[in-house]
Image (cartoon, rainbow, N blue to C red; front, side, top):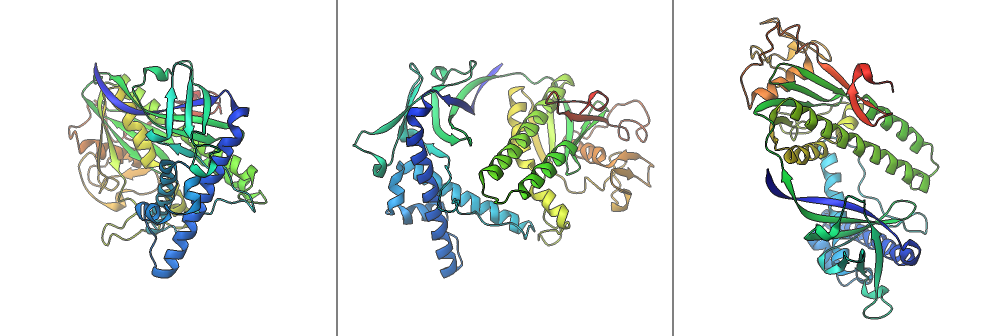
Length: 426
């Protein structure tokens, strides 16, 4: 086994919540106020010169503002960096054709400010792992005296011991909706397993089947997106029924919706890596979707229709691929990204390229070699062959075998895990 340094985030509860909650509230409110100052500044600059300032420009401009000194300087920098990242995300959605995308909102509910996450970098905290305490810095405006700080007593999971971590890079104070908790962002050294084999698998990501897998050994799997779509529909409907989209109820529903999506992506990426270990896979080949939303001829945004655009822009394939990469890395499996160009219209058996071969949703029929295949599995096999062009040794008729009849795995809400379709009851 080899050793590797990776980034991990550990969540901890605060044992002296009552003692420190008022001080943490003040920091959370201050972070929201600074966000609003930055947001207003962006509005003003945009109206004057048609340009949104970036993180460095905002920080330089607002260093002398009164609200900047409510937090430690590095914490204030992080708030403005998050604002710049939010604007970049908005730009991306508009470039990708989502005309309904809105710029970052002000963080204000009437006359009240929500509690924003506060990030403390190296100079803003001091960790005492012997007594499980962390000292968090206040901004000069909130200090009652020069050495004033917030002393939090934390408790991590039983399997997490921060005293064994050499490099804690950041501490985040996060409001959960009910109380504060701490997130420790650490660099840790882990043991990485040797590759379980030398075989390959192709992964095609989509908006109906989230993932289609084509293994070199000659079998395939589908992971339908039904569960996640049901969640999105349910929570979107509940949120729409709220009187105020910024209300506490709407905020909690959004948090729950996001948490369920994150759990789904983590569970799916873990399951796929476990399947790859079982199958002796050493390389996972994933389609690079960076150009999915652009037209191949002119590079402009494609119009997929109202619902198609919304599906694409809520599609967390970048996040999923990142999860897949670090989980696979721990098992010694390499994740390679390749272009998806022509993979949906090419026959994985004979190589013929015809868009009309995709006769309907989910079905691919090649009029040259008469292959019949599930369209997503055919795409996954084309992706796999870009790294390992050898044909799968299924020993049977490809047109009616593994290409046409993939195994289906569904998310079981009762167990919170993926299982074969016939074993799922919810």
